[in-house]
Amino acid sequence: DAGVTQSPTHLIKTRGQQVTLRCSPKSGHDTVSWYQQALGQGPQFIFQYYEEEERQRGNFPDRFSGHQFPNYSSELNVNALLLGDSALYLCASSLVGTGGWTGELFFGEGSRLTVL
Amino acid sequence: AQSVTQLDSQVPVFEEAPVELRCNYSSSVSVYLFWYVQYPNQGLQLLLKYLSGSTLVESINGFEAEFNKSQTSFHLRKPSVHISDTAEYFCAVSDRGSNYKLTFGKGTLLTVNP
Image (cartoon, rainbow over all chains, first blue to last red; front, side, top):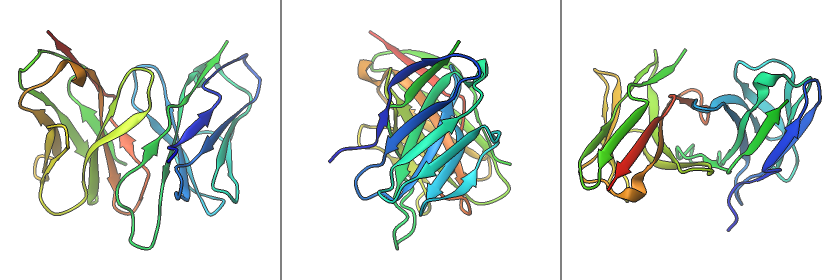
């Protein structure tokens, strides 16, 4: 059973460019959340997708956008990259289900973005 | 708004010694609490969680944490650590009306020395 997979694992961009990161959730999961983890910091919540809609959003500018596809996979897009966007971007999946949240998020290994 | 404070950024200990990693949170509502572990160059793995019920929760590898509502704390403990426990540990909180959205602390690097 594959866990959460993310691509690419590493990438380098320059200021002003745009980037797209991809995430496939754990099999059977329907909710995808994205987190940004700057060096030496804890992850910060960017947004969450369920049923192809953005359900919750953290304190991130509109340069950060996302999408969820019918197969539950997701993309994170960042426009007009800044040096401060350099971070590890983590995708996490979970299952809403009928029994309510079980309290677990499954994280991928992340995409490390370096902005020069 | 919620926040999580991990009081120690680094905790060095010797193998087989006990350890406590401290976590305090602030929230105006009822919460769920979590500890995640991150090994080098890996994603986060759930170590243990408190959702409801017994305030003492345990993991399969010997860690335990106790939810203390009056002190708004969720400290992580292990009576005897191993070299393999060396990792970054993150405490996180989610309010009960905001499922799946976690607020993390800055992390505590636990280094177990031989």
